[in-house]
Image (cartoon, rainbow, N blue to C red; front, side, top):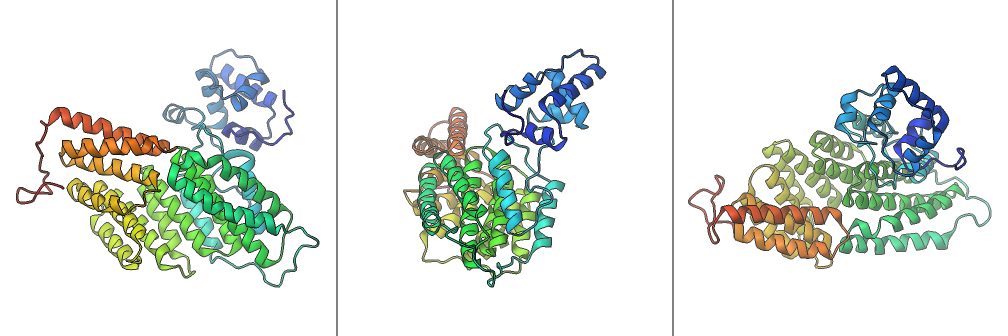
Length: 450
């Protein structure tokens, strides 16, 4: 049995146990006592608690009911969220940490010592809890710049060469993420963040050095969050993004903070939490720091996706128009992203024909090296064809999406392509080859979607 003073393992139960000051034996006793209160005899064995935390063993139903009783969690929550999702684990932003260098360091330590890398799934912070994170951010704004008069740490504590290596590595990791997806980079990102954490612990340094190191760590957490989203670990993704907000704030980087809010907003859209998505992107837009046009365009696209999910068509279209006015027309990749987000918003608004035409324009503009995005948006285009009643187009696009997804390490792309293939197959059985159904939005006087 391992020493109970060791760092907390990567499991929500570790948060619960340590927050109550319980040892493994204490928690076993609490479960046994509450089981007896429920009429179920149970032995208090610390070994089974260890297995729950470290071996991924799922407690039997009676043990879960007893633990829920001890923690005051309703049984309906236990039924609705499979283990360990119902546990009241640590929220995305740890309590009691300031929005400064020390707070950012503490948040990064919590992320890496516990929740950021666990594949089993952490509760997603939503609704009122998510608003708490926004309120903390709002109270901490504006983003400050570290004190330039602060003296550097003595000696050779600031490792210029390693910091430069981390910065250089970020560019390669981003390209690898675009090409192969989050599964290809998630472990490397975590490893680089651990190096960054050790470097940060040696400071504080002179302002310029701290800005550089904290900013690099913030960029890594953003990439780590994206990788977590791509691999279906949404609770972990939130923790990456919210930790990145503290790092960005401590480094005075309002632009990086806005990008992190955009990631949080898009993640909320993917989870169907459109109210949270709109609240998050609004928090980013309310920050007083001047933002580059490209970042403001990204926020506008996020806002459009949130409005579309809420069925607010006018607001969604206005946000897309705002984004179009901010983007650089000379950049094909910028136009591709705008068209892709527009197509997805149109799908959410119930306009599959218009969505299909918009996504068709986006696909040729995406760089061939961005295989993951190509797979995702090709699958989305196939789903739009399914909904607009075009079996031939849907089948062709879905097959292409599946081929692209096989070349990636992106579970999200694979699942989306599989969903498109299945939907296209169902439509093909229902509609004879060559026939095209006209949707109400297309009308009899329009040509079918190309």
